[in-house]
Length: 216
Image 1 (cartoon, rainbow, N blue to C red):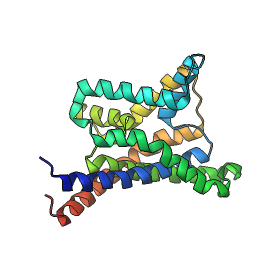
Image 2: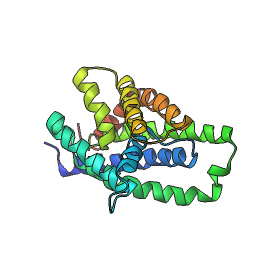
Image 3: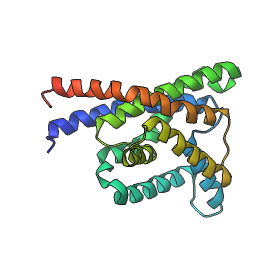
Image 4: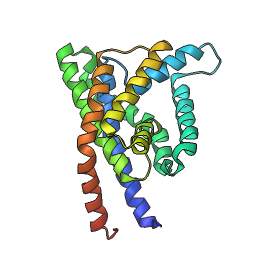
């Protein structure tokens, strides 16, 4: 059983990873070359029910996340941890903070090839931060958990499963009226493989940090 000290360290690591990941998401969004796969799904659902009162993109995002968590409670409830809730609550404010900090750069007005570089960098940063969140083992975002659980249940490489899950998000969202651009394709193609490279690296790094803290 984990001690309060271990939980504290793991949550701190999760928040560091979450901050890094959402810095990448912010770069990705500011490049304005297409929504990430999960948000294509959310956008499609939002456009489908937008005529209903009190419906916003953010509220649909929360509802979809809660539905995923409800399903995962039956599929693999041990994956639902405090970090899952933190990812839901903190992701938006972190993106808002970085968006404000980066607004003077006026990234959307930059040339397309520069925005493509920023987009690719954002995907790599997102993948790096996401793997820290995953390997902190304090919980992770609901949309990321889908690929993690399927990968473990089917004993298939995370990178491949992540691509397939992202493509399913995109296809479903597009059929419901969501939009996507080259950025969506780049994100779907890059995040999974890059995360696959970073997962073992960050697993060793976090194990070393816990060892130095006297936790094995």
